[in-house]
Length: 290
Image (cartoon, rainbow, N blue to C red; front, side):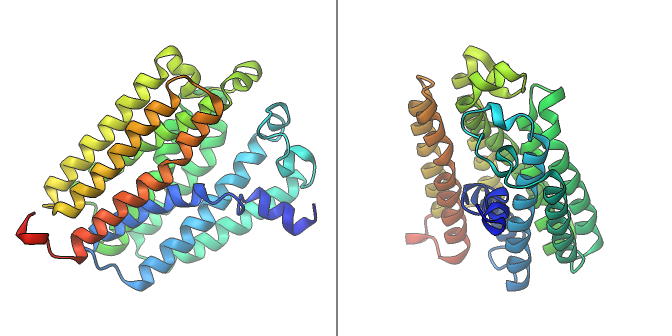
C-alpha cells in the first residue's frame, strides 16, 4: 500500500456510506431552512464540509483505536492497525482536514462558526467515548446531527423549532443504525472492553432499535405536520419506514452479515426521505392533495 492509498483508506474515501449518512440529514436541513431553495454556495460549502469532517472523523477514530483495531477481525487491516501509516502522520492528516473545514466555515456567519466548533468537539470526543460510556452511539448521533443547526444558522441565522425536531430525529436514527453496525463487532468488542449500545442493550437490542426507528418516524411525521408536507413528503417518509421494517427483519437473528447489510440500507432510507422532501418543495401536490 503506497502512502496515497494509505491516506485514502484512513479517510475511508473508498467506503462512502459514512459520507452519505452525514450528507442526507444535512441536505434535509438545507431544504427545510431555505424552503426548498438553498443557495448553490451553501450547498457546495456544506457538501465539501461533509466530506472533510467525515474524513477527519474517520482519521481521529482510527487514531484513538490504533491499539484496538488489530484485535478486531473487521478492522485489523486498517492503515494504522496494519502499520501502513504512523500515528504522527494520522494526526497531521487530521489537522489538515480540520483546518480546511474551518476555512469553509469562516465564510459563514458567527452563529454557524460557533456551532461548527461544537461539532468539531463532538467529532473528536466520539472515538474516546467508547472507553467511558456504554452509549457512544449517542455521542456519534449528536456529532452527525450538528450539521442540521449549522445549516439553519447559515441559511436563516436562526435556530427554529423545526430545526431541533429534525436534530433529535436524526440522533435517534443515528443511534439505531450505528447499533446495527456495532452488532457486527459485538463479540470482539466484549473481549477487548470497547463499549457500545449493542452490548448495553443486550437481548433487547432488536426491540430497542425498532423503538428508536419508531421515534425517528414519529418525529419526522411531526415535522411533516409543522411544514405542511405534501403527499411527496409522506411518500418519502413511508419509504423510509418500509426500509426500517426490512432492517428489523434482517437483524432479528443477529447474524453479523445481515446486521451489516441492515446498516448499509440506511443510506437508501436517508435518500428516499430526501427525495420526498425535495419533491414536497419542488413540485405541486398532485390533484391538489397535500
